[in-house]
Image (tube, rainbow, N blue to C red; front, side):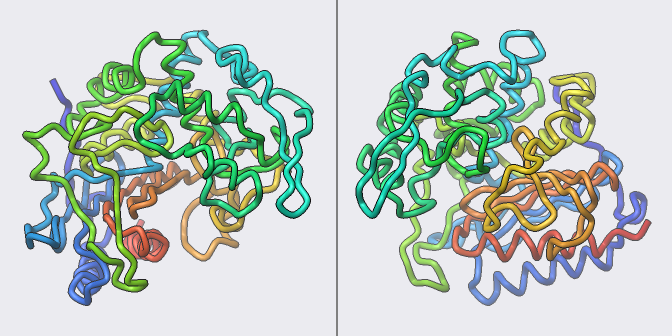
Length: 394
């Protein structure tokens, strides 16, 4: 039986209803101006949902209104779920964080590091093996093909690493054949590391990634709308973007989630409703437990949400000032520096189509915003956080 998330009024959990009304008004104004088609936002504090609202249109092509049970493509918010799956296997003693990934995927024993002059690409030996920890904290040397224009990125594009008609096994075999952008452990570089973790789960568990996550994470938490595709009976709830970006005028094309996925991307292939993802966040905020269901231990959550970079440099376009990265999440290290509010220890991430979440253990607060507007995602991540924190009263 699914345990419902408790509900409270904003004032009962130290939030201002008037300030949350300002959040609603800001979202409604941006929707009215044609900036995004619609949104669903949820805020919880002290374990209780105090704000859960839907705005605008679920599908701008049909004018269907947005509903709180709309299903969104969450892209890189998949990474947090897959990282939890990996740590569940770690808690069972089936892997160590310092294990070389080649122990499970032998092709990575031959991976080389790219070095180039102009368009000329050469390869050199890696100084050390890629570890499971490297994959979780994005220090593997793997990248995304859209993250630059070096010869390494060109090789990713030529190899069609993003193609959808491939299995997880085939995807990872392609990645292992390509040069790394950096030596393992030397640079935080956002990339396809979590796709490799998805394949690692398959190898260790003997199940497909989708089956493992469904049986071990989604069903136990009551996340009935989350997965790698949307069954026909639920496809009328899929949230859709504008056909063209309202600022750039470019066409918008998101994942087709109306048929079972061949490539179950651990880095970005899942869908979820807002409340389903809130259940996942409630588990994290509950130190690995939601109701009577425990997925992880308290110390495991502590390990995952601690900084694992130290002096390893990051990418300022994705890691804000005063932040590091844990095992699946960006982690706030300083109260200041970043141009948005939060507490030391807050952890978060978002998705390419505009979805975003964070968990603030110090304030016992978590929040999730769901939109399908790729070009507007950076604006709404900051706006949402600013206005939620403005509502904290005690």
